[in-house]
Image (cartoon, rainbow over all chains, first blue to last red):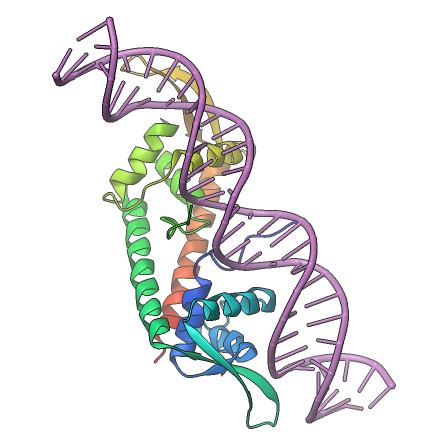
Length: 110
Length: 110
DNA sequence: GTATGATGCTTTGGCATTCTAGGCAACAAA
DNA sequence: TTTGTTGCCTAGAATGCCAAAGCATCATAC
């Protein structure tokens, strides 16, 4: 199966996840939906991308996780942004801004 | 050797190369410098990234190459954007814009 | 003269990240 | 009872960039 153009650019996923969690704790499946909704359906994070990313992010101490039951009575693993995660989010946003600025400069060249 | 934060986001390199070439034919080493200069020193493309990318891009028919001697008397391989390359550049720019827009939306969430 | 640094091309191997594709389970609605 | 949604996880492949090395030419400085 030929890979089509990736939805996301590599490196943006962590930022999106951290951002989603900065609005409040959430479980994996919900993170996908939140990102989808916030982006007006433009960003579709695959489960196969998300869960490994969450694992990675937790290993780095940017989030903590905990199994819990939510309103609907379903069990799910809730992730919560840590202080370090919030710092990381800020750093990634700054880095993103720099990149966008740099690319913009190049693209403005005539 | 631990990888530090990537300079580029994966997926942007082709667009930058095509954009650099859209300003006129150039050889590999010059492309690196042009991107560096246009971005106000913010983007540093490694040779180990560039040359394989140029090969890829040429295979796809977005550029053609030809050995030539330039002013200084040095031999170099000059790359030139094809019509298909120009279309590709437009497509990649549009795709980039969509992504930036989507990420912006997510980031604006409170 | 010779060492250094810039210019120039190429290749190898590694590595991080994402996607595809599958499996599993619980629950609701049809 | 079957289908769709919610929910988690993993293996394997594809992608794409980087580090590091090699090689060659040329200019400059010492």
